[in-house]
Length: 489
Image 1: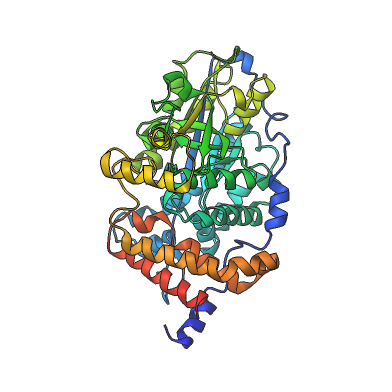
Image 2 (image 1 turned 90 degrees about the horizontal axis):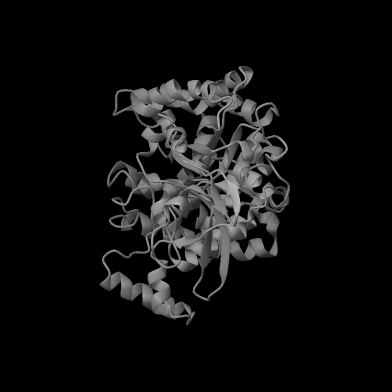
C-alpha cells in the first residue's frame, strides 16, 4: 500500500469505535461488590421448584468491503447485496437485534415477569452505529437504561471482536474484554456497565491450555466479572470424568491452574448440550425445568436452573419460532413454581440463601486431568509443555484447541494463513506499544494506538476461520495488511 493510499485509508477509518483510553475509569466502575438484582428481583427461591435461564448471542463481523474499501458491518453488506446467499434476511436480522426492546416492555406492561440475557459483539454494536440504526440502538437503550425494565434484562460481556479465546494470543484476551467494556459504556452508560457481571465467550469456546485458561480467568476477574457461561462438554470433574448430571443445573466453581501451579477460580454456569437455537426458540429450557426438582448444595435446598444460549437471529427457528413462542410463555407462568431467571440474579439469590462459591461443585477445562497426571505436581512450563506434546502425539482424543459449541469444527487446523499473520500482527502491536503504555497509560487515548488496536482486534474475529478458504480469509489478509501499514508505516 502506498503512502497516499495509507493516508486515504486512514481518513476512511478515522471514525473508530471507543475501544480504549479509559482503562483506569472502567476498572473502578466494574470492580465493586454491590448486588445488581437482589433488591429488584420478584423471585423467592423458597417458592420455586426449578428455574430456567436463556441468553441470546448476536454478532455480525466487520469486513473491509465498503464501496471504497471502508470497514462496514456484514449486515450492511447483506442489505447492499440482497441477491446473494441468504442476504435477503438482512431486514429480519436487524429486527431480531431490536425486538427485545418491544417484547420486554409489552410483557411487563401486562403483568408478566420475563427474563433474557443479551450478548452482543462489539462488531455488531459498531456496525449498527455505522449504519445509523438508532432505531435498533434506542430500543436496546430503552430496556437497558429505564429502571422499569432492569430487573428483567441482563447484558453479558464478551470479546469485542468475537475472537475465539483458545487461539487468541494471551496478551490480547484482556484487550478484547476491555474494548467491549469501553464500547458498551459509550453506548449504554456507565451505570449499565456496572451491572454487567456475566461473560459469554464467543462460540462458547473454553481454552484448556493451562496458561491460556489461567490468564483468561485472571483477565475476567480483573475486569470485574463474577461468572462465565460454559458448555457442559468443555469441562470435566477434577478426576477427568464428565459432570454429574445434577451438577449441570447448578453453578460450578471453575478452577484454572497454570504451568507454575498457581490457581484461580470463577463461577461457571453450565449450558447443557443440545440444538441451541431450536431449544431456545421453542423455550425448551422452561419445559425441561418443569421436570426438575429442588436439590441440595451443602445442606441448603435450592431450585436448579436449566441454562441455554442461542444465536438470537440466525436460522428460521430464531427468526420465526422464537417470536412466536417467547412472549406467550410468560403469561402462562405468572404464578408458577417454575420461572425464568438471569444468571447474576440466580447467583445473588443463592448467596442470600447462604450458598457461597465455595459450596459449588468443582470443575476444570476438559482434558486437563490428563495433563496433571503426567505433570505429577512438578509445575514448570517445560514439564507442562512436555506433557501436552506427549498427549498430542499419543492420544488422538487430546488437543489444546479448547472445546466450543461444536466438536466437529477446528478454529486452528487449515487456517495457518490467518493464524500466522494474526500472531505476527499481535507481536508487532505489543512490541510497539506495551512499553510506552506502561510508561504513559494516556497513550491508549491516541488515535494511532486506537487505529492499530482496531485492526489488531478485527483480525482475530472468528468468522475469518469459520467459512473456509476464500472471501473470508481474503478479508483477513486485507485487515492484516492494513494493520501492518498502521503499526509499521
